[in-house]
Structure formats: C-alpha cells, structure tokens
Image (cartoon, rainbow, N blue to C red; front, side, top):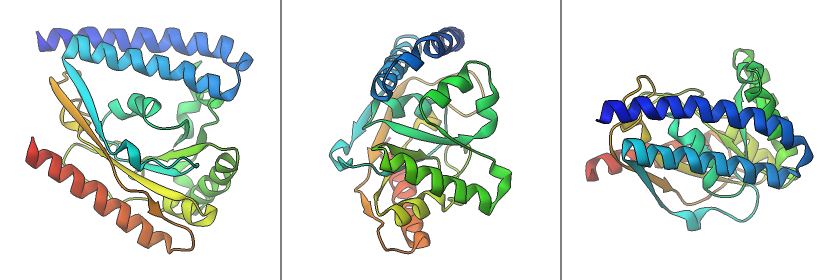
Amino acid sequence: MQALGSLLFTLFMIAWTLFYAILFVLVGGLMSLPKRFGFIAFYAHCMLGGLRLLCRLDYTVEGLQNIPDEPHVALWKHSSAWETFAQFLLGPPKVLVLKRELMWIPFFGMGLALLHSIAIDRRAGASAVNQVVDRGRTRLAEGLSVLIFPEGTRVAAGEMRRYGVSGALLASRAGCKVVPIAHDAGFYWPRRGILKKPGMVRVCIGPAIEAAGRDPREINDEAQAWIETAIRRMRTDA
C-alpha cells in the first residue's frame, strides 16, 4: 500500500505542479508580490496535504518563535524535495537562491521569476557568490527574506557537504540575522526514488544568529554546527 500511495502522490505532484505553474504564470503578473506568495502557499499546502493523505507522511515544527520579524537569511538543510514545498508555509515570504537551469523549465521557470527568485550559475565560482550577495541585498531591502540551501544541492540523508559561505556573507554585508533550519525529511522522502516512508518529519528552527560585523566563516560554522547537531539529535530521538 505504501508503494501505491507513493506512486499516486508522484502522479499528483506532477499534475498539480504543471497545472499550478501554468495558472500562476497566467494570473501571477496581475497580483502584488505578497499575494503571489500567498497563492504559492496554497499550492504547497495542497502538496503536503496530498503527502499526508496518500503516504501517511506529516510534519511538526519546533522553534517558530525563533524566526525574526525583520528580513533575514534562512539556511535550510537540503536532503529532500519536501523542504522546497514546506518552506513556503514556514515564516515570512522568502526568495529562493537556485541554479539558473531551473529558470529554463517552461512555465515553472516563469513562476520562479514572478517570486523574485535569485538564479545563479553555480559553476561561476566567486562570481556566483557575488551574485547572491548583490541580488540578496536588493531582496532584503525590499522587505523579503532570502532562503539558501548552503550545501548547494540535495544531500542524502545522514550525509553532509561543506556549507557554502554565500548566505553568511550576505547576512554579514546586509547586517541581518541568519536563521538555521534543520529537518529530517530526507529519511522519509529520499532524494532519489519514488517510495516515501510514513511518519512525522521534524523541523527545528534554531535561534537567530547575529551576523552584522562578523566574519562570514564564523557565522557559517555556527549555523552548520547547529543544523547538523540538531539532525543527529532528531535521529537519536526517533
């Protein structure tokens, strides 16, 4: 039954995403930016509802009080597709830092552009970091928070890659806070494969880290230590 539910969810995900992307491109340009994020939040809500119904996979959140009211940089662990939906429902509107190839997908890429996403060429090295900082500061000045997956790509559950420094550098230059966010979704919805395991994804939002005037490497190390320690603690408690 779990395999059947996972298959049905995958079909639903593809159909719902395609339909909603086309609809969003058609009507999104007529909306204010806050309403666009609200429109996408409904899409994410339906996605996670389908996951709960078909795969018996739900989630719980700890530490919502740690999200500051002002624009900030959110650093999320990236081990699944799950967090790309869930992030729309947790905290204020956030623009995504993502690889530019996603912007080339018909309708989907246009939808990301309507959300003021920051598309970068990950092969550009230091230039890509500068793009994140320059465009990120503009988004923060507009009153939007910025979400970055510091490992740059999805990493298998239980594994870790070196965290990129662009998020910490952006926060340091902009004088805003960094919010570390850990979760164990990758243990239930692996980065490869269709099968989802039933259970409860835990999301833990850490205390905001002051970044103004600090060495970005120090900020980055603090965020990475908090996220990875929180995930190990989740799995010990599971």
